[in-house]
Image (cartoon, rainbow, N blue to C red; front, side, top):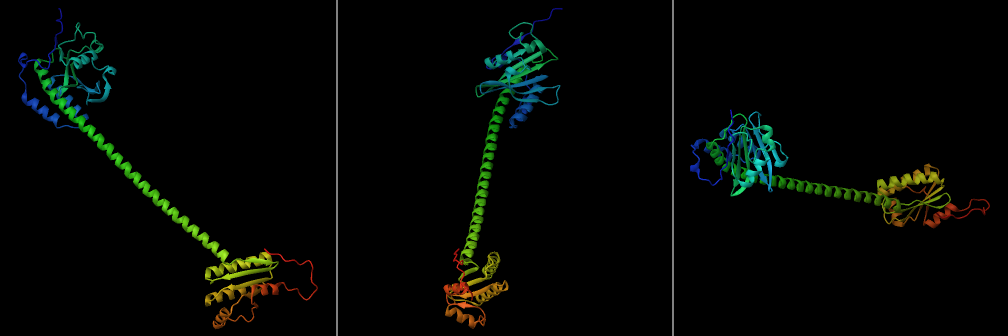
Length: 372
């Protein structure tokens, strides 16, 4: 039996409706349009769109091709043999083996519907690699338009029945395509807006983190500056203590300690420790406590001086007080401190002379003055 040649049906979008004898299920169209208009997230919209189109157009498989930056890209596919739609998101049409590229490009270029009632053995699309390989029984490709501009292509096929896409279903697809194009554009706008909001949120978060980091870094710098200043103050105080009460070896075995100002507990303790260590290290026999720089004295300073002198004496060295002014001497007496057994000299020169005075023996010419 001879097989009838396949019929190719094309109709421009502006063709009179009266040429197609259709009785549309208006309720189904309105329901589908409402469902599409209520979805603004593009991946979910594409899933819903393919489900609705396959249900109303009598197709077993559908692919949605959208135009983006003047390029045709496959965004989603649906096969009733699969559980869920395939969201491909941007696969170039030329790289896909899953659609008849020649037919899709023709519809995208001419914006005409192409409906094949059976697998063509001849005609402009008979050589398409996809058609020759898969032999679809019915095929329908329709353009998508938005505000007069081409927006993409819907590809449908039925591998079980020939002539599945009747004029009524073609008209149904035309009406659904109009709403689909609007919904896709709205979803794209929403997606772009969402991307901008996400990008802006990320920028604000990054700026906030930078501000926090700068604040933390500034606080750390301030804390470090404060620590550095505190360390500097401590070093300066230590230097002041060392320079304020120096221990000078003015002669072999003779140390001089010029006292300036009052002696608090810390300064007196450090002076006592340092003086005793120097006496031991230099084997000094004399330690001159020079009070020339002391204009007045309190009971604490007087007590510290007595303690230093007694500590020196415990090491077997002689402690001599020099430069004791009358006001200071009077204060010491008023405080009840007995220094009658402590050698005193009017000034540092006299104290040094008493320390280096030769003993009751011949002068040793080898003795010499050393000043450190």
